[in-house]
Image (tube, rainbow, N blue to C red; front, side, top):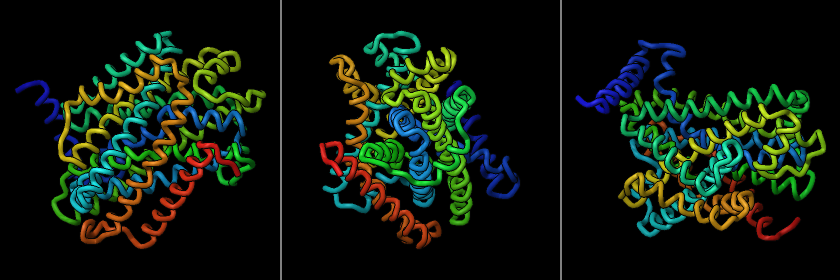
Length: 432
């Protein structure tokens, strides 16, 4: 028996056995939840990717603590959307793109696939650039070589999938915990005003057009279309339910996991912003608008250790989110049009735009903003489709949305659509 086969059987089979024991009430408490942890932690990486770094740092440096409530709002919406995506995979045994292909006209499926591929590529640009910038600043690797290093590292991460679902889940979760630990350290260094953090996390404020643009950008950088598709794939066949009752139990465990993972991502985003507020805004550095400037400003203000921790978290974010983005691209293609390409080829194709951007010497921050505009155009499609399918009892069975859930999800979708329209309007020169 090969090492690969042995690893797959040992890792995945152990998780499945533990999950069965939990479903049969032979494991309780935290031990019952452990085998179900994984999919939401993979998905939550998209919520702490380099695009979030850029928007959170700029918001905190320019407006201090006053936009923290936007992070809370975005995270609550993301938590509901990811829960619905996970539930769809559990209820149907199919991913959201596969359900779209089954129930939508062929022409619409191809249109959605095309837009979703563009979104996946736009997402990958932001994630790739984040890791590349991190390598450049931390290890002084030239930007062009940094893109190649990032491509190789993320491909190696993705090869863990050959060992089954569990090793890749553990590896990505480790990256999430590294990012979270880095921001615990940054919080100690930055010494935020906790009264201001608590107040502005719940009290809305939008003082001017710049604040509106940044608030919309924070939400646009938080809720990602590719991970809405991906989460349904991560749960679809992970633990095979034996009957409808099993589906209900698995969905309950999944809901708890989503709450834990997304809360962790939300806390990281909050800490990004209040670190920028405490270190930059409160010291008069209100013009910190990109990752490179943040690093260079952190060094004299908090010392090289703080700046190094910041870059380590950025590298963990860039590598892990880029790997997750490639996974999502595979799910999108296979689900919508029914075919796949080799993983190495998709990795090469999706890194080509970033290589071109770096080779041409384009501004990374401006490129990040443009990628967010592209995502804003595409985001409503998967969110609306997800709500449409999860409200249908013929598709979801006992896991169909409650009426209140559908109404709240529809409200979230409406907010996302309106805010993204505002972002597009302001990005193309409009004003209030």
